[in-house]
Length: 250
Ligand code: NAD
Image (cartoon, rainbow, N blue to C red; front, side, top):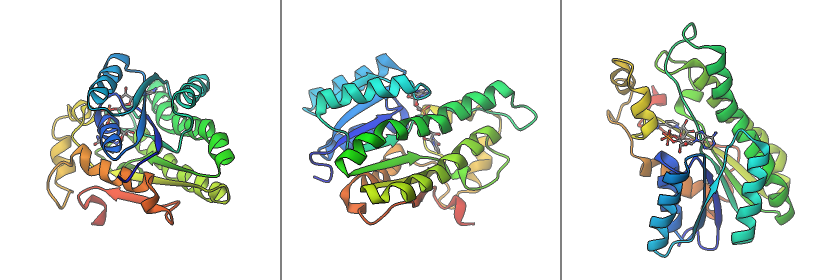
């Protein structure tokens, strides 16, 4: 199995892309920590995995709080002894353009999507540096690589921050045996996509730019996550994996 003996901490794994990653990584032999603010959903995922004899733990994690990350790391190490992989997946989005984005919305999106990735990385780094191994996978977005009028501008800016923060992590910590890569999904069927598709015509406009002409599935992102999390990608760091049906190829 591709993730045998690996321990993976995933933020925002109670639903959507993160929940699929948790199940797919466990199917490849990983022990998985589901970190999220959604406790009922997270516990349900972990219970379901336990019935399939998978090793999983739910930990309440608010990615915007340094103390929450520290508690999550302590609980993860107490249970599984180590953390090999961090997947910074938690994220929020919003609708609206620049004039329609409040300061509060800007701050909140930056806090979860950009600061959350920084705090998560800072929380796992000492452990990974000590062990001289680790893989960090940051879930950015196609919207972090290009300007559009179909995505909230604060969301785009936050995902662009994740893109370069990933490269900074990769360059600084290669000497410690740690790799860091980002993934840039296009439109994928999750609760977030449903929530941001309430703007009339938005989804149709996004889809008109996707050469494969369909929305992606969470599993299609999950396969990329497994690759970057596992030792199969041992010579890959600082890279950006685009999984977008060809949107950015135009
Ligand atoms: P989702 O809304 O379905 O799931 C996001 C998860 O993050 C939820 O479980 C939520 O509770 C959690 N979360 C939110 N705030 C948190 C916090 N402060 N602390 C901990 N957890 C928190 O969204 P999704 O579509 O599964 O998105 C997952 C990631 O993929 C996000 O970073 C998103 O920006 C990115 N992404 C999604 C798409 C898409 O089309 N679905 C495209 C590109 C990128």
